[in-house]
Image (cartoon, rainbow, N blue to C red; front, side):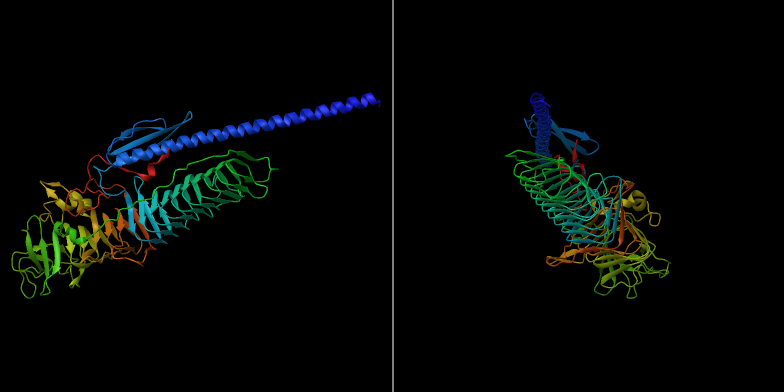
Length: 600
């Protein structure tokens, strides 16, 4: 080959290499432009979302205080829509650099419905190794003023909120978790998880919508779902070791350490990013430095010095502790049972059709000597002086419904009792039978045998005003002109515990195996279940006899809370008040429904 031909070949080779290099540089620049554009779009979206949530927060506070909504501004605009019969929907649209994001939340008008939307309200720590099954027509909450440890299962609860930690090892399906402390999830499926402390995911746990964390987060789970975590906002540091699991979007104000992951769709971090090993597909925007395998073309890093995420913190959960005292309801009872100094049973009657108000004795019929009769006076043998009125039907006419009772210890076992609110001085054990009563004791209450009881408001007109066993003995303040008019105290089927000299006594409620109660169960201290128990109402256990070192609520049995088909006369979310009124706050205030948050 001549020198001239050799020179031309060399020149052609050089030009070819330069063309190839130009194409590579052009493709790389286009990729960087695309990454930058995506990062900018994500930044605009999140800023618009932050503005929308700020508007929702201010609007929620205004509705809760009965005030008008804040005026529209360049960051957000608010709109409200009435949702019959008693709800309000608040929409907040956030704006940022041409992007618009709308979030919404539903509220309950407190003037129409007092009380709590929590089907389970517990004060003190909860150690649940059994099963709680809630069946209802609408989502409800479980609120624990303490730490929650779930090794059993909770089914049917939309929101579990705790003022302490939430530690889950059993398989759960809960829409929302909210904790003032740390959240540790070893299993289960969740939509929204919010923690003021740290968050740890292990095992098979997955979050389908949003994780918002004030502290640190460790994502160590490897569930077999499309995304182990759809989206997370973490104000602290993040540790990820999820094997081949996929992660959606992650925003972190701290550093991010990725040891193993299947893919991370979008990452924004103010701190240092570290990707160990070869890595997996990751698209990230970071404000600081990044260490990763630059030879992996699937790891795309865009640097944005000065990036500030300003993530919305999780606000603390504030739980108002109820105060329950049986003595507050003594004046609302229709029958008050105490023991007289001579050992006999004294019954104070109030507002019962067919009986004058006042003090009676429990004794035997003067004609046939059968038990379970009320009379004004009885002889030394407990035989009534006429007239006498039957108030309880035993398993046989000769059966004494109160056999085995003694001062401070009441035993009620029969077929049924005259309808109304019953108040007992001491502990109460209610055995077999079907009752249309609200049972209140200043001590503790236990059920046994095949026990069935209906709260006054649950029983309604048929069980209270037109009771087939006691048609002429009905409470006049609940039955007016042939129409049932319930009172708040009638929402409770069992209510236990009272204060004496500022010290709480009793308050434990023990539901025997196969017991069925229709109404709210209010334990001033703790609730125990022997299993196969069904409650058609809300449950509260308030640990008022506790103090430092109080034992946790330990539930190892199976309990079902069935809220389907509740009668109109019964309001499970309206706790009994201590004044006989409606117990409602007015002023057009609204209470947020926690499960209703939605990014639209």
